[in-house]
Image (cartoon, rainbow, N blue to C red; front, side, top):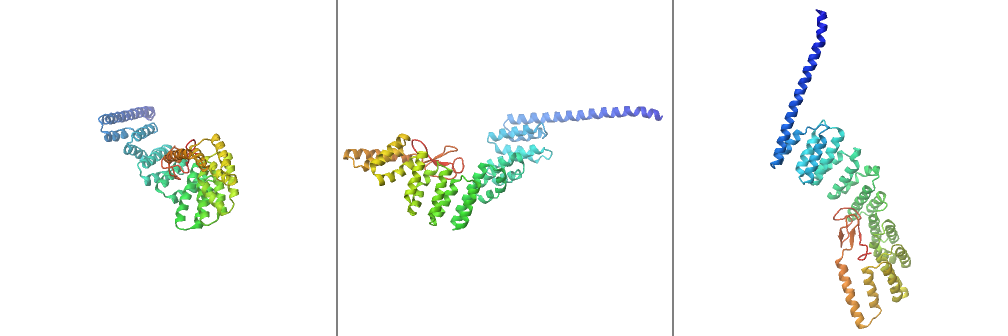
Length: 389
């Protein structure tokens, strides 16, 4: 009897395995059938423009497993491209709530959901999501960029500065440049409160973040001028030329006033001549002509201006040439013609924008530290070419 029992035991085990396998197959088949019904129902709702019901069925049909996660992301991206943010949010929230999602997919879902919130203008929710990803290497840099974008939009400079340690660790030049401008914004607020020492410290911190931030030196020079520290102000203006030659024409007049206060205009014009030789910009050309006219007369200035126009012809330069011709006491008819030309050129220049964004091409007659179009910092600079420098 015992021997028979031992003989039948393997048979019983084999039968149990066989029946169990068939049971699992039956369950899988039923699940697939149920999945197919839900999927078909979802498509029918989609085709009949009942999109909210369609999403519910499709999300339920696409059970979140390793082989279906990408389908979820593809569906959400399609909704986002079509401007249907509420539907993209629904899919991404479904993914984030799923407890069985792999870490990599979970992080991607959080990142995509944060972008949805940002696009919808829900800054507090987007901020919360991006903060979750600051320790996730694949998304750390991007999340920092978006957080700085949020704090720039909300003018929450202190919150942006609070990210300094992480930004310095990554050594990303664009983030450091943005951080420098956050310090500049805080310096302006401190200046309104009359906190002179705090302003200097904040602007120096800006230069630590980005040594090429001409804005920091621009503000520093203004503070030094206000306190009659003209030598320090002039030093800042000279630094701007090394930092950003395109922006330097904006500081020429302020720099000149510093050297006048120091009673050292000769050093100023020597520096301007050096800048003109290196860059050929119209602003430096016109400024140096003042020195030539005073020291050598109008003829010498006109000769130098003609050479400058041959080197780099600009409408502003031509206008100044007409001005010099009028100063030479021409005949009545010539004077009237030159006056008309000068007025026409002046009217034309007033119509043209003075600044252009180097990032997006936005044109403006007013200078902004942050471009109104692309919001990049310190990219709005004097126009170059025939109508500018």
